[in-house]
Length: 328
Image (cartoon, rainbow, N blue to C red; front, side):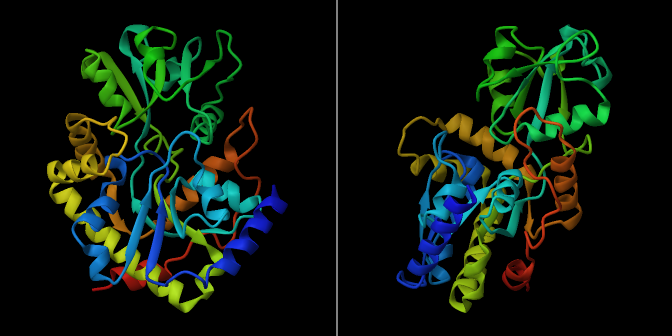
C-alpha cells in the first residue's frame, strides 16, 4: 500500500505544475447532496469565480475513495472524514487537513425504545447495526469505553454489518442502527416512526467523536506558494458558500438539486438535509481539541478490522490556510 501511494504521489507532484494554478478540482466523499451544499453554492453564486478560481466539483459514491483519487492526481483537494485521512497518512499518503467546515459530528446510533434500550448500559443482549468502511471506529471505541464485548452473548452486543440504509431497523433485524442526523435519521421518520419512539446517541456527545467532513490536500503541494495561495482562496470562497447555505437552506437545497445529474435526489429530502447540516457547520478552522478526541477515538477502537491508526499522527493538520483565509 505504501509503495502504491508513493508512486501515485510522485506522479501527481510531477503533474502539479502542468495545470493552471487557478483551476481546482474538488473530490467529494459521497454523491451530490446537501452534505456538500457549501461548495455547490460557492460555485453557483460565483464565490469561486470572484477569487479567480475555476472549480470542478466531482461527486463521490460507494466505489470512490477520495484518498485514492487525490493520490492518483484526480483531485487537488478532497472532502474526507478524518479517520480515513489519518489512516491513509499512516499508510504513506501525506494528507493534511487544511480546513474543517463541519465542527460537529452527524454520526449517531438510534434505537427503538420498544426494545427496552434507554441508555448505553442497556445495550448488552441486543443487535446493533454498524457501518464499516472506516465508520466503525467510533462504535468500537465506545464499546471499549463501556467495557461491552462485541462478540454477542447476553453480556455483549451482536454487531450487524449495516448497509447504508435503515432497513435493519424497519425489518427488526437490529435494535439500533447507524444514522446521520441529516440523512438516515430522516428516513426513519419518513417510514412512520415517531421521534418519541426512538432513543438516539451522538458519538461526539458520548466522548468518542470523530471529525467528519474536512478539506484535505497532499502535504508536499503546500510547499508550492501558488498552490497554497489557491487553497487560501478556495477555503475562503467555500466558507462563504457555507455561510450563504446556512442562511438560505431551502435555496441551497435547490442549488444542490440543480447539480444532481443522477436525478436520484428529491427537493423535500435535500431541504431536510440542508436544515440539519446547517447545525454542524462552523467557521472552517480545525478545533484542536476535537482533533485530539478523534485521534484518541481511533487509537482506542478495538476493531475486528484493521485499526485506522496505530500511533499518534504528526503533521496531519495546519491552521496556516484558514488563518489566512478567514482573517477579517
